[in-house]
Image (cartoon, rainbow, N blue to C red; front, side, top):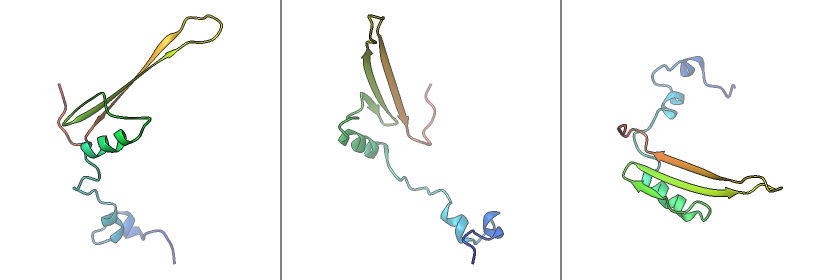
Length: 90
């Protein structure tokens, strides 16, 4: 017996268990406040620098000083996390 789904299951025929198993769910797997709580619990990540009902923002800055008296620079990283399905912001 083959481990792959039949051709009718692969082409999306109705009634196949394979296609129903991969159908998108309307229930949220994780909410933005839940993600914020999970990331806050991680010591290397911590609480977001800014957050509202539709976005989390994390900022990290690090001063890089190369050897041999060359000019240093500051590395700034910004990550914004938006919830899927929210309206676009202007």
